[in-house]
Each structure stands twice: as C-alpha cells, then as structure tokens.
Length: 250
Image 1 (cartoon, rainbow, N blue to C red):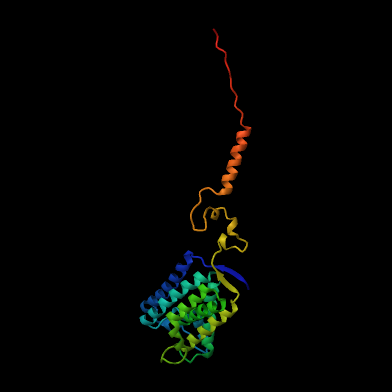
Image 2 (image 1 turned 180 degrees about the vertical axis):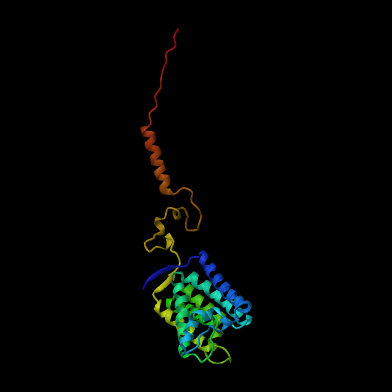
C-alpha cells in the first residue's frame, strides 16, 4: 500500500475539523434542549444493544466541561491529520471510531461510555507513531509537537480517575498505533520543485547562469556576448548597400 502524498493546503483542512466540532456542539445543544435521553446512547460493554454506541458515543458528552475539553484537541489534531495525511485522513477517522469503539465494548466496564476522547486518542497515537515510523523531519517535528501538547494524556489510559473511560482512551491509543503500522508505507512528502529533481543540474539552468559565485547578477553572459558578436559579423558580411545615381540634366 504505497501512496505518495504531499503536504498541501485545501479548504477541507479547516472545513472538516470545524464541521466535526460544530456537530458535537449541535448534538449537545439538542441533548440539553430537546432530547436528554440521547445521553444514554453510549457504548455498553458486552451488551448487544451497546454496539450502537460505537457509532453514536463520539457525538455525546456528559456536560459542557466535558465537551469543551474535547473540542480544542479534536480541532487541532484533525487539522494536522487533514494537512499532513490528506489521502488517508478519512480512513483514520472513520475506521478509528469503529475500532476504538469496538475495543471499548470488549474491554470496558459495565457503564455508559461516551465522548469524543476515544477518537482524540486515535489521532494523538496515529500522528505520533506515524511521524516516528516515517522518519521525515517534518513529520517527526509534528510528533514531538503532539507529545509536547498532549503527552500528559498517556496517564489517562490507566484507571487513575474515577468516572473517566480509560478503556476508551486505551482503545484509541491501540487503534492509532495499529493504523500507523498499517499505513507505514503511506509517507507524505512536500511537493518537489524543479531544482529538487534527481537529474537536475544547476550548471544547465539558464537563469542561474546569470549569477556569479558571489551572487552578483550578470546581465550578459560571455557565451552570449560571443554569439552576439558572431551574429553581427555575419550580418555585416552579408549586408548589401545599393546606391542609385541620377544624372542631373543641364
């Protein structure tokens, strides 16, 4: 599965993350305003009816604080995903929701597991490990930035806080690592310019020939001056001048 990608900005880099964040806020508003019962549509581990929560749980949050803490990292990480991994971004998000939710359903405690934090852990894990595996300096820098911003989240894959779905976090971490291995050959690279091509030679570049070793611009190259002189000499040799003499009458 070898795919050559490029770092390229598009409307979707910002539009899709904004859509995700707006969607979870709209669902929360509907939950508080009209349908409080949708709060129960989370993942219920080991129960058949709890499988529906694999699809719905990322959209549901317990309170405004829970929603706020998930909105900012979801937006930032989604932007990074769509910019650096444009061709596989939707696969990571959609399959990440399904796989992390399934893992939560398998290993989770008997409770209602809700929130977009599982998807956030998928993105953190994928972006970090993908950059390390790719060994591209920009992607490694992105991995270090992710660790700097969200490295403390690693503690919440363990049962260190009451009422928090550490199983969902652990499922997201495992899923992100798994996708980083699956898409390991799908390496993003910046666009190549003419001077970055393997067969490019600066000595043959007509533009760069007009600069000397010190970077000074040369208006007329010696080769061009010689060629111009030869053309002038050829023109002088082939040029003909016709004179018309008219005798005056007495």
